[in-house]
Image 1 (cartoon, helix red, strand yellow):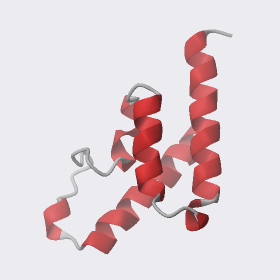
Image 2 (cartoon, rainbow, N blue to C red):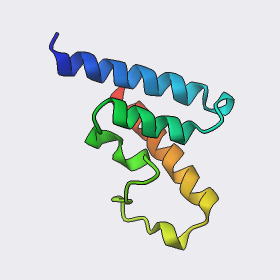
Image 3 (tube, one colour):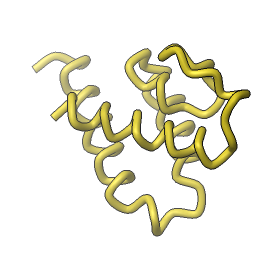
Length: 84
């Protein structure tokens, strides 16, 4: 197995565990940002990193903070569903 495949498996495992325990973590989206950096900014994660611009046609300025956070969590879940 090559390095990229191993790194991908670890990334998915770490994000899956964090998502499963997101209610026990003070700032799960902050943890996502740290993981994003630790794994060298994988493009596939951009849709659920708070500081990245929305690329799905969403206009965050037109939504509340809660709606934007909910969208990030939905994108995170969608990522996990497609990665598994």
